[in-house]
Length: 254
Image 1 (tube, rainbow, N blue to C red):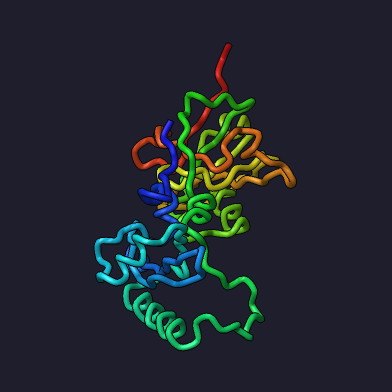
Image 2: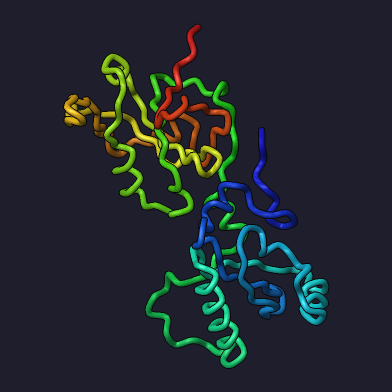
């Protein structure tokens, strides 16, 4: 079984990295602190595991970091372009140099706080499990929901994407008990799971042919991720057929 990365020494897991952003919006602003002395040691920008890399420090910063007995790593903002990250970095540096250490008065929005590297990994890292280790009590439909982690999508958005519409054989659709969303851009992280309440048929005409698809409804107040043992898990060995946006996980037969 693949373990999450050790955020104290190495870096983020692949899923947690994906949550920082991608493409042009892969940059973030971070700070390193001395938790024991309550001091800011460094404010920087980067992407990937930059927050764990120290080779770019100037001599005074490198010395301060090496002497720090209890350091903290915090992500202040993410999903930024490089220019946006540089601008944000300069603003934070200017703030720390001018009024750092003074008590702020503008606490109207208490949700604006940095996230420690350890908390980021806990929130967005996914433990890898093998598909063969699963034994659901009914047929599971796994559908692709790429980029859900990097976009940090809400529960409502995930549910809407997961409902579909999906093409499949009707005899199989009738047997589906659970639906799980798989972020194929984040090591097949399981980003949502639902127990199916039913489905509706949606017919569309394309190139003169009628295409039948299915849209699911989910049971409220059920914890399918817990039932399936898939909470904060990824399924790296789960395979999708070429060009397919879905696959099935079947119960084991005795």
